[in-house]
Image (tube, rainbow, N blue to C red; front, side):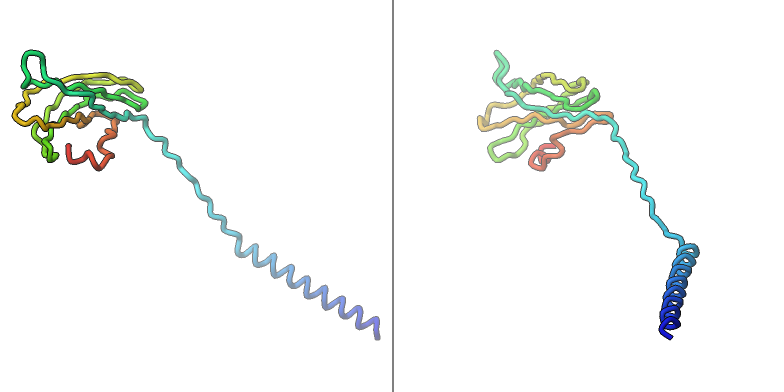
Length: 157
């Protein structure tokens, strides 16, 4: 009898394992694994120009103290030429109120380069507490203006 119990236990174990194996195979055949494939599309950005204008100084014109000369540098940190750069110089009073705006088309500027410019304007010397700033107002094409990203400067545009 012991042999029958050993053989019977072996048969029962074999049948249980066979049922589990067949059940697993049937389950995976009828329900295949669903693998989610994700494709990441990397959009390559177009090259652009990045423009920044740096105010150098303003001073009276020789022989006419009411005409002021604004001097500035324009920088292009970008990969392409910047076109139709518009520079605006702003004169403010001691309370930071805008007294005068002077605008000039600087022109084009090659990639990774800088250039200097100047503009003339009549500014009355009646108030000696004036301050001046020169900023990039705009440019055309695929062009970004650095000053537009600085919130403190937005009041001058």
